[in-house]
Length: 184
Image (cartoon, rainbow, N blue to C red; front, side, top):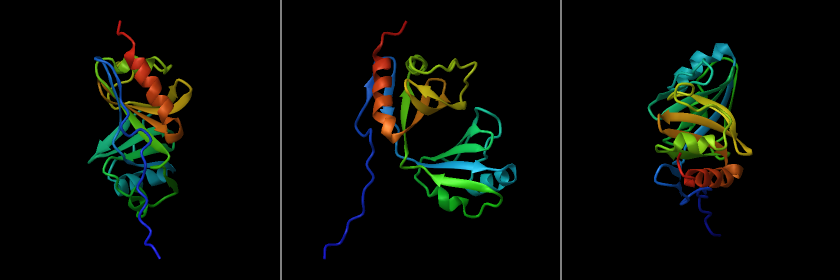
């Protein structure tokens, strides 16, 4: 009998890029992701277990040791770990009432960077992305064209667009086309 080989994950945007002289649109490196819902009594315990403080203020994020926690709603966070660590295992020691779901294979991300990053995303996002309103570290669930995304501003000219894999090709093509437009 043949020995089964481990299935290697497939990344839907691997090798794809877009943009112009003003903006780069590239797939983010693979990461672990956790959709987290928690009651207030579990927030401190989960923060300690995950090694990153869960933000409690709307549209904010926190980062520690390659792990980022994004506030998505009053009791909801998206945790992203760039090292690919097992986030479910990290939650095992937490106490209180919470729900944790590994969404690493549901989501993928696109990095939009450069002087034209804000304008590129604004072509399809109704949210005000000016740095005064949406500063570095800000995040929110919003729309890009016809798909839901979670948007994180990582630097003044760098955004992370978290999107479901099934919509990722559309989102990357939308951003690549938006990035080709001449900057005014």
